[in-house]
Length: 176
Length: 176
DNA sequence: TATTGTTATACTCTATAACTATA
DNA sequence: TATAGTTATAGAGTATAACAATA
Image (cartoon, rainbow over all chains, first blue to last red; front, side):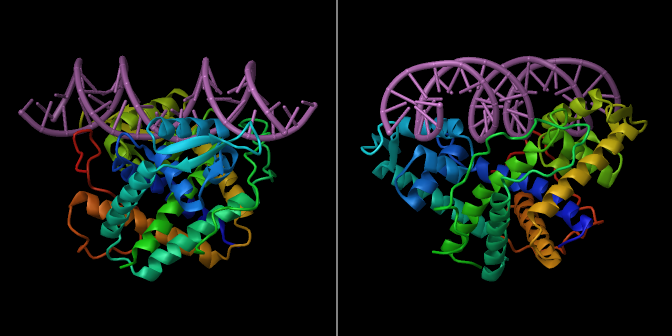
């Protein structure tokens, strides 16, 4: 359990992290913005899956996923085939072109990161990765809760139906 | 220097971090979205400053800063007074109402974070904070001068130590 | 009736460019 | 000419709600 000042400092770093995200986003091809890249990455990592599963992994609303998926499907990077087990669903799968693009993007971002973090030790990179994975896990775990005191600026009553994450393939820390 | 697989895993965590950011954003009052909160936070931390300085700290284009600042000024949370030293500039300053709102937001976010990270040790929180600060510094360093990372790493900006950036965030400053 | 997925709408954040008013 | 700041426009990401098809 940490003190208030610790949390304040961490929150500050969360905001500052936006600059890192933006910089990485700027090096994506204009045809493949970060949302599309995320779709390709998850399909490449976890294999074929349905929309709902992809939504869980992306941790966004399915309507958002639907738009991103439509974008990459229009460009031939993934295929959407009907699910024989459930006609409402569609199975998403990387095409060879999508795989090729994914490999290319991966090489590019890794190269950029290697350049930026050239003075980081392997262990430091691993440490940051581990802590960020745990951070996300901590948020997932407690997502159902909401025990915040009411403030004058109470926003929405509360997210009525949080994008419920199921157990299975949740970003498994640093395994693999 | 880490291996490719390390970087790939780290990149994955960068994407996953979006879920954390979104969740924190959802608990902001609708009148004060995260962009506005960032303005208040930086003014509270570093004191009165000009638009250009705030742009540097936010690490976004000044046009973006201008919009956020206009938003919080309209609501009476900051004041924009003319800079006697340069009539083109304006000095931004928190009003009492802004300070009050800032304190309230800070308490709220800290409380939420304390809840989510209740099983983290103080040292772990500090470690994550330190690594994220260094991450951002690594990106800043290599963006200013396009060296290949020979720059010795600067000591971490400790809590009360303002990490001042010295590069412009004007539009024409693109050096991808 | 509930669930899967799509679409329409709206809002936030961001960057680029054109503009003003000073310097 | 150059700089500080504003505004207009456009693009990406996201959430909510209404909807269709299927379970």
